[in-house]
Amino acid sequence: MKCINRELYPFLTVLFFAVVVLVLLWPVLDMVVLSASLAVVLMPLHRRLSHSTHPALSSVIITCSLFILLAVAAYVTVIILKANAGLTNQIFATIGSWLGNPATHPGAFGITISKDTLAVWLVKGNALFVNYWTTLADNFLLIAVKGLVFFIAFFLFLLKGTAIRDLIFRHLPQPVRNYCDQLTPVTVDTLYVIYIVQFAIAALTFFIAIPVFYLLGYGNILFYSFLAAFCEVIPILGSSIAFIIIGAYAFALGDLRGVLIMFFLGYLAVSALPEIYVRPVLVGRRVRIHPVIMFVGLIGGLLTLGLAGFVLGPLIIVLLMRSYRIWSGDCKGAEETPDPGAVQEAGL
Image (spheres, rainbow, N blue to C red):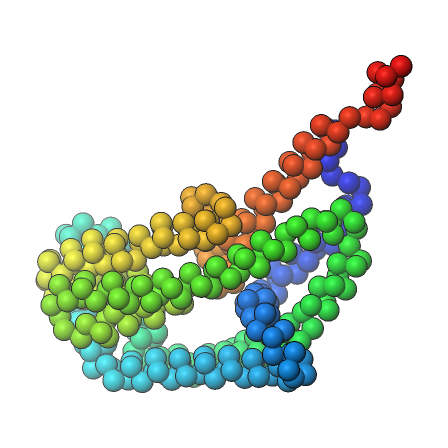
């Protein structure tokens, strides 16, 4: 029995070419994807404000509030990094000295990565946490363009998102429209839980990292914990970056105890456990998908789609699983529905 209606073929063709365009223009469209997902999450707030003011003004208020919130967060982060610039310089300088010492060799400690590769990683970390002003200046144009695209798209999605959705739905084939109507609630739920879980795990990382850095005994406990939480907020980094850097610092100092603490308590317990278990369980429980499948979507999305994969990875998994359930349910229902002609013939 064929469960795919021929009316779907033109729509699937258009969808295929749309995906190709998204991939080709990804450097800017990832901001569009993120803005659209965040607009969906904040749409209830927009609708509430629209009851007492004009929808355009409501969109402006929410967009400006988001801009101020991100600006304040960036300012606070820069202030904290500037206040601890001496410490971060010391950390990267110590690691750099170890790498530059001809007498040291990573293989002697069981590390299979070459010094050249470690040096490249060190340069990237140094650009992010030490020479961040230079990094921002070198990439200012790209950051400005992406930021402009993000906020313009976010404003438009808030203001016209519902109208655009209704317009698209009206021109969809009826079978596709039925699927989309059933997928809309789970899409909204998934986006909500992705953002909520992301910030919840970042906050959790800050607090559970405090005793770990206390045991480390290097002081600056709050700064190290902030660094881990900051990296966790940024999906393409993750708190593991902070524990790897501090673990490398302990390694360069010859502090084997510190290396073990950073690996077992920091990397495995504080960083890996929430990513492998807590996040997939929380997201998967909300949308009724097994945590292992959700973990594949989360990690696969980040590895293949970059920053936007933070949203699209789990969302694609959820939509595929829900679509399969709807499709299999429709096919099962069609098989169980008796043929009227057969029923009449049986009655004769």
